[in-house]
Length: 97
Image (cartoon, rainbow, N blue to C red; front, side, top):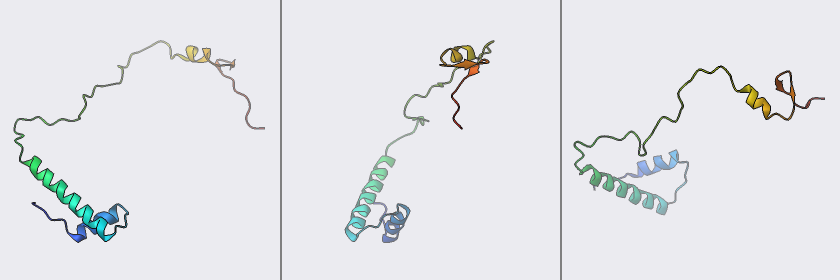
């Protein structure tokens, strides 16, 4: 075990997480954190030379379409769905008396 977790670290983490831990919970948290550090030490033993870092775990593709010039803005199609129209705009019921 490379690192020991001190009481001060457990208290500080509890404050950051806004937790009030009992003595038993602090001991359990300390044991869990020490296990995590041991596991990280185990991972550090792996030979990662020549392994290219991944920017993301899933393949990421550009989901945006290319900009294309168009002669219409599609407002005609949008207005075709309107229940009421007036002067090439949506007509809505008056909401303020």
